[in-house]
Length: 476
Image 1: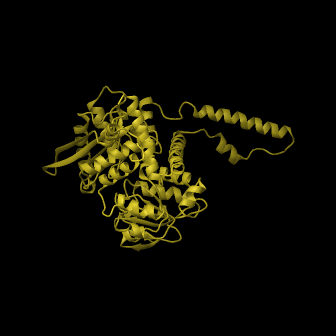
Image 2: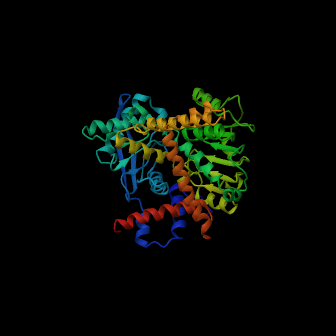
Image 3: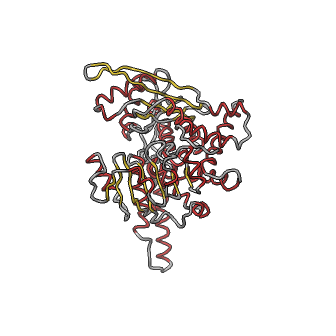
């Protein structure tokens, strides 16, 4: 179905869901059960700040409880509304199913501009919001586990975790009530970078399949590919950093709310990030040319476009002018349903948000497991692994010397081989495996079914079938 007018974020998710279920043979009742949002709680609470009471509106939506706990971030933004939160909760259901994390889908939000409040005020607001959700079991290690999202981070998650512990003093699993916490508050190594790292792993897996690369009218590997990134927050920065430093990609443009900075030879990502951290803007960065109309840079010719900002940034107004053969959705819903039609008809390959930005929830799953097990990953086996590797290296050196080869293993090899996997290495390994496996399940449908002509539909098909199977085993 071709869409001639742009739909809202929620409507776009509904359209993409409908496209997938039309290719499935689900009973009407089961289809409707998977489609609908189970519940949305709206809370309005007051906090005394600056000598007067300020009233805030927040939401927590639970889309599906086919598995529990349900999982999904909490965002702070003035644009937060019920439709947006419910759409994001639905995406979380399908995202968790796709990457095989044992959660249902949820999402939360607070209508607030965090920049308008200082840290102490934000803490009071966050704790009161958490209190309202906790007392209704909408934050709980076994029922509903939030995480950071747009406008929130480790700091806010630490406040929420502490508030939960104050209200549940005998719950030994209290730290598992929320993920994305600082390391010293029960967090896990690699969580801050997780979504950006997941983007990198997704692209690496895509480029392992020449057939898929050819469909995107590209060739070769990631090496020297030109990339435009919209959004230079946590996700955009980490994706840019890893792709440029570890895969030799050229980040030729970064788009932010106040404009864009361009350098066809490739931007120095660390220098740009340091400049933005210091000044609060990408303006006046000496390593590139600044352009005031940042949105027009989305249409710049490049190999890969990474929208990592807000939903709907690629829409019917600009879809025809998008000049990238490959788009990977680091943000949630950056391509509207109408724009998706336009781009698919032009042959643009889109790696969908449901898969592409699943790195965050995947590593959140690892953090939740760590909190429940009460032990750091790698603590039990790391030194034992090193000892076994040391025995092997010593024996190889002995055999080589006894055979008269006159050489030994290099110090560089020994250092790399002898080092046992710590928490960060294990987290990255688990994330890489999750992203690879999920992509392979998507592409299998993409290439095996003639009625599936894009990765987004394939992703929905995989996810919906898993949710449906879960309901069937419950007797529904």
